[in-house]
Image (cartoon, rainbow, N blue to C red; front, top):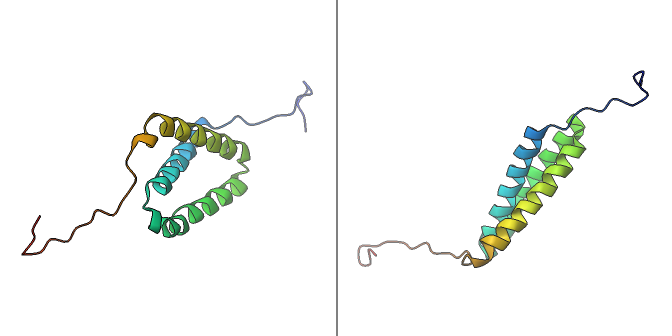
Length: 106
């Protein structure tokens, strides 16, 4: 049902939801990129896949496809800026865990 003006009612876009989802997706991309190369498959299976399923289910439930798309675009843009400014200069993640023993404490 349209109002008297003839323009259909559309709900406003929730800015806080967009920022929260964008931050979540940015952190997700950061975790995947900074994970070790030989452990990346497990990281992708344990973190992003369930998170993407939850975000899609949330978007279906709330009918918030516009917010989800805008958050994805904002996260991708933010991550691209981070990668250009800082990410390329970081050393690659590597396994630097060392076990201390009595003979070799450091």
